[in-house]
Image 1 (tube, one colour):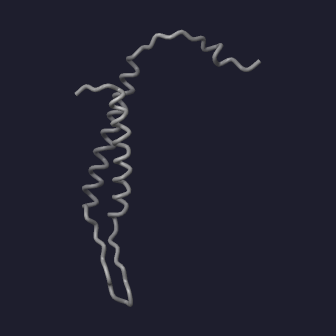
Image 2 (cartoon, one colour):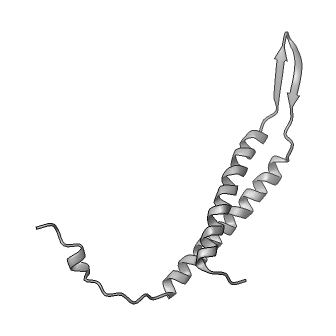
Image 3 (cartoon, rainbow, N blue to C red):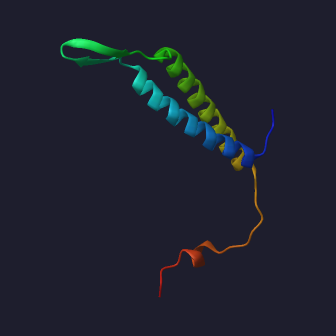
Length: 95
């Protein structure tokens, strides 16, 4: 599937946000919380999602981001732009 670099960069940003959300969720899922009151368990909070499934999804998204980044960089390596500049003048020290 072909897309523009602009769309790919927008998708990359959205996927990075999703990865961040899932990483937070993974941290919450790794433990079971029990609330005690007066020596008895009042409430036990168990994870709603399987931590392994969340971790697998994070890995899939990170692999996608790697491949997307590599594709964008490959495309940029093949793309030439036409502009005039003088690097020596631009990077010259202040006089």
